[in-house]
Length: 378
Length: 213
Image: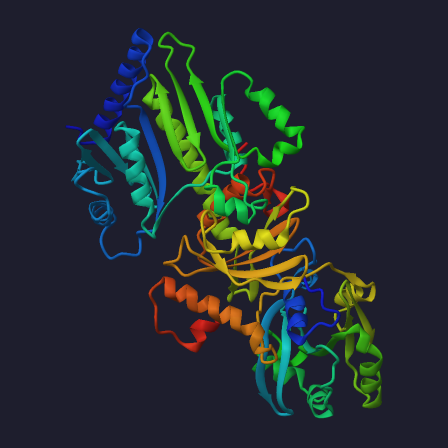
């Protein structure tokens, strides 16, 4: 019975080796691949201790217990919670009070469902990794593969909505060879606006006698699937992603939010500038897509048209609806400026730019102070 | 950003707020902050010996011991009142320094100057009014891309220099959404959004202050 962090690490090390062995000898891929999910929770405003409210939260998930019956157990480590499914265990590491890391090797069908159900709670979300962040992960290994997808919203018309189910307009998966060539092809083509990188695969390989390696597939939604022999390398990459991401989110929440500093009689804050590079953006359509309250943007507001090419919207962020924060936007055909009020959730900005990359303009850039790209980690 | 040919008083307030921001915006320099001015109050009524005064924007510089009180006349500047301008003219800097929320280590030598801000199209009319009544107020004439000082000098000479040379800007952010003159039709969307926001939190009872936040 895995009862602490050390046991968990050993368990996943063994699992990876067995899967690797099976693949080498029998040429069969494992059905119980290592999967890690990074999620964001806002549970800190309860009166219980952190441990208690994590356990309570996990027990009360609205998940069909007949089919996906699981038991929530505590371990020796108060920040590590074990969920025991019929098909195996899932571990919630809540050491970071805001960003939980979930490790499991149960079937993706079950773990993905659990992930979905967890995120249906109003105070939970996954991390959102925009293209510069995903591209920057090559600092932790070699780029082994790439996933690209795009769902067109601006050019949809009523017939599309009526006849065709919403689906990716563009979907591409590239493994190992030709990744750089494909990226170069997109960079020099008009299609770059639809090259929404949704996944990168990073190979981390040790050229020592052990030849330990891991290939991690990291999606923009913070799901990391690992294949190889080293849980240690997978764990390290996960912690690096979390660390960089948290740093960016914290920076957004401290430096970029607007508030009046009473002590110094100063209005502090920096607007976040998103530049659109897509040509001929229909601003009316853009505003409609962004502020309808629907997925993926989950922003609702009433447009205030100051001119044909400038719209101001004070929108309610439905992702943090429980916190009731409004975010102000200024929209032109070439830019979206975001004015964040005090106590805003930085994850909302990550979600905004990631969804812009996936459905409006994959080349849009998000700049902060000194014109720096906010989500770059290189 | 505002494409209207004539700024409202609220627009002018937001313009000056942007010039006091802690961080410079790409489209408008925070020159007043750079010159050491802090935003003390907006539309605060202060009772003084010369009557109650209510600057639209009051800025103050502790190091220079100077405060700048802006009286902003939006749109066609049709509300020029001698009585109001007399109060500004007769205002004691020392008294205001003690009552207006200004941090002054030496109120006796504090300098408070009233500056009039207007749409530049009204310059001739306002200058005539100022001259007729012998007031000594600098006028900042504002259009959609520049601000210029006319009539009298601003007491802070380095601030004066910025506006003497046509201070250029591209646009500004409207931090303050509405004032007493904002038509209801413009306020309604903000109120609806606030109500929606509270509905998301299952908060069904709220105060006027909460709705306006």
